[in-house]
Image (cartoon, rainbow, N blue to C red):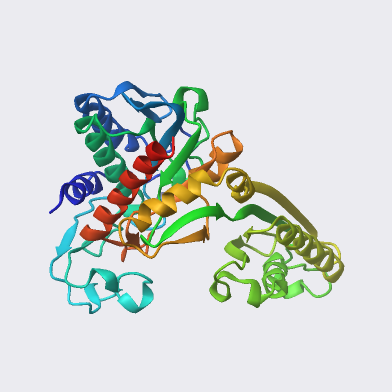
Length: 405
Ligand SMILES: [Zn+2]
């Protein structure tokens, strides 16, 4: 195993799932298990200003570098609560033959479903045992950043910018930079190492809103309901039927946005529906929000006597425009990946990262790849070679910042 893969596997074994239902910070105390390990390792490597906040953000500085723009590197320590994350047991598939990998009867990794897996034919694929996710999202990023720090510490003659790092908790529950101290971090520009295929550097994310519905009906004994019952379950069904199927996630890709009903719960008396709206453009998002309002008005007219409440809230915004103001951040990363011999392109993340918020907090942040795919599932995988390409790409990017200084 190469050192970055070994390091990744060690971190993957530490359970760090975040908890969407918790109001604590971090949302699960198990995230501190990994943060404390990392804190010790950073001190041992010789990084300075190592500080673990009580809200679970770990900051550090790599001593040295040219005075000028300070570059920050960020990864998140938590794993997605969407898939089991307790007791991860990484498995190695050496000399992978390019065929589907069967982890369990119902857990099969099909290369046809992955955009960049076949690149690793003949190499080593790392997966879970099929009972949990793997946690390459984003312990691969954590491992890549620490290996980069180690390389910087061992090669003090490299012409490179000042580098600071941070590891955040709770990215997967949308609270990654809630308690992030931009001043303590001290970066002018940053990269999250939280991407997927090595062929993509991402310079934009979705605009994201939530639309939460509360439907109050009128509960009556069904035997005597004629003319008086208003069934909130039916209203909820009608609400979803009124949403356009061509706008649903299963029918959208590339730069399309979507409207995604992801939660329904209810009785005749009361029902709740949660929807999330995603769009790369501001105008597109305005349309999606208007559509929700139009559905509310339509339902109110269709079910007189019901009470239909719609609460929409912004979750994060596309930082694309901010990143376009100074192209160096994205261009140097693209060049860095190209120097690894990868046909890299600039992409759009069909989701959000800590960088979406950080860019609006004054630190323009783009996203670099990790070499894994099928995140948030038991089929998640990362390639040993993918990790090393992503690591080399990051090192090259820092070298380019130094060259261009
Ligand atoms: Zn992630």
